[in-house]
Amino acid sequence: MNALIILGLITGLTTMFLIVIRTSASVVFLVLCAGIVLRMFVIGDLTLVMKSTVPNQGMLAEEALNISLVVLPAFIAAILLRKSSKGSKAMLNVLPAIAVGLLTALSVVPLFAGSTKTNITSTQMWATLENMQGFIVAFGLFVSIIFLKSTHKQPHPTHKKKHK
Figure 1: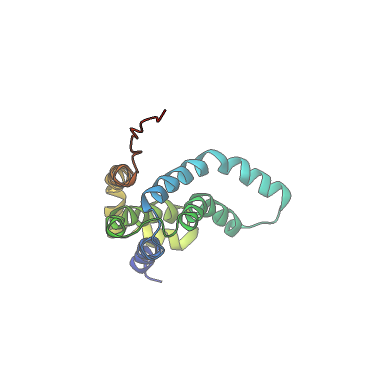
Figure 2: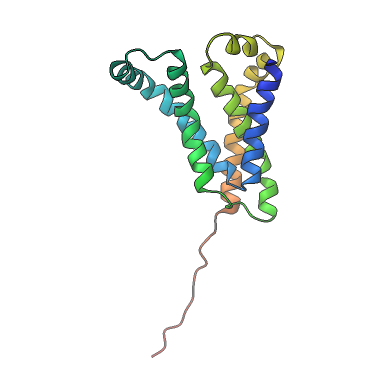
């Protein structure tokens, strides 16, 4: 499959999924970042456990474990938060959803095995996306914080008089 199609599918389907289920893409972005950090810290131990319990597992199992550690927390958050973005705020949710789609592609493609990874990472589109990685993360974080602040309900102080 063409590398650009794979990149487009990862980014586009992730973005559309978040928009269609009307989830809080800002929270999903932050959970995706946490999944990336989780993978960095626990993959070594999990791979060791997996190799000791299932000695003949191949690269596919390791690839699936790596991708699951990154994507699964964000997917669970998206499902748990479905229908949390309503009305006009759903339109504002598009920017964090795009950031989630782009960051998903940036974090998952390097975990692919073999020729699929090579085919994608050798394209000019990937080089451009990789050069924009810092901007994508900063933009996603900024938009997520702004979106979360704007949707946070402030408690209204009550000035009730006590009746005697």
